[in-house]
Image (tube, rainbow, N blue to C red; front, side, top):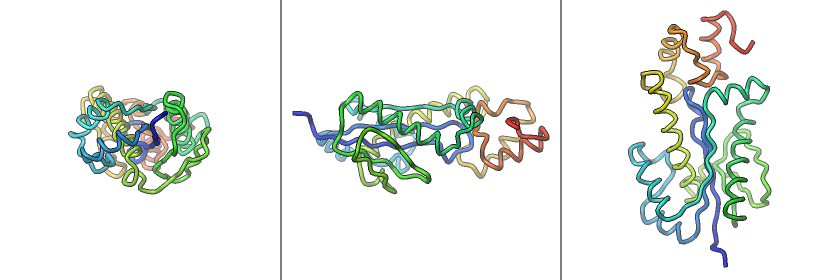
Length: 213
């Protein structure tokens, strides 16, 4: 008899101007839940970056299955230039991550997703639940958030090495870094999301128009 299991999904990167977007789905059985709980696994927002690798190693050791979709900034910007908006991109990434995982592990009892504005996820499963703060309620979502953050940190390190600088987090303290790169004539579409208004304004100041216009 197949072990009872749930799938959780979460994302990292939607609130950051720099870097792209990562969505992970994780499948957790009842037995794995006990192990994760005993090691105090929780939403990645409540875990320091330095601890993420240890939790990933734990989940690998106990056999947590996952599917991760990584979208680099240039890919993200290309999709928006083709007419999608950022929420449609998020929705498609969730659908791909969850569907890919279901194909690997079979249908779970439930699919839980940490709710986000505009979420409309279409998958071949009738027990999908969108819940605010799901990472604090369900270990499968917490596990997914950790897997997503691990991949996102890897992307951030790689892009930072390319630029020779530490990439800022968030969206409110990025103007200095953006101006620096624009003045150096760096193609920022490789490193940052272009749709936020502050990025559009800086590009207009520099080029007279946004690059997609």
